[in-house]
Length: 107
Image 1 (cartoon, helix red, strand yellow):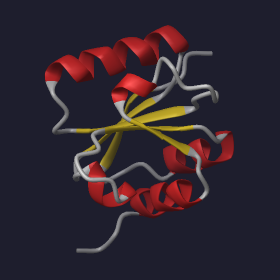
Image 2: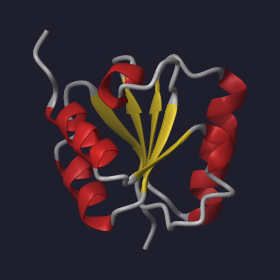
Image 3: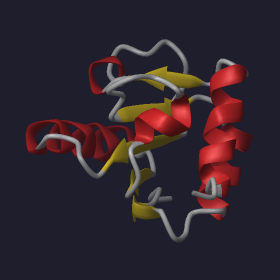
Image 4: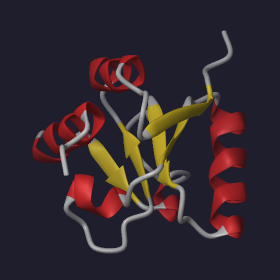
C-alpha cells in the first residue's frame, strides 16, 4: 500500500509535536488549531461533536478514508488537530484521493 502525501505530512507533524490527539482535547487545547482531521470510522456522536467544534471555532475539517491511526502511529486514534498553520495549509493543499475537505474555513 502506497502511503498518501497527507499521511506523510501527518507523520511529520507527529514528530514535530504539531498535533493534538482526540476529540475531547479539541476544546481544551492550549495551542491554536488550524485543521481538524477525523477518520471515516469515527462514531456518529463524536463526528457531531467535532463538526460543532469546527463550526464554533471556524476551523477547516478533513475526513480520512483510511484508518487515521496508521498515519499518526497512535492506536485507535480517530481525531487529530494540527496546531501549525503552514503544516495545516500543506495538508489541505494535498487532500485528494484518501482525504476529503468536508468543511473549509469561512473568511
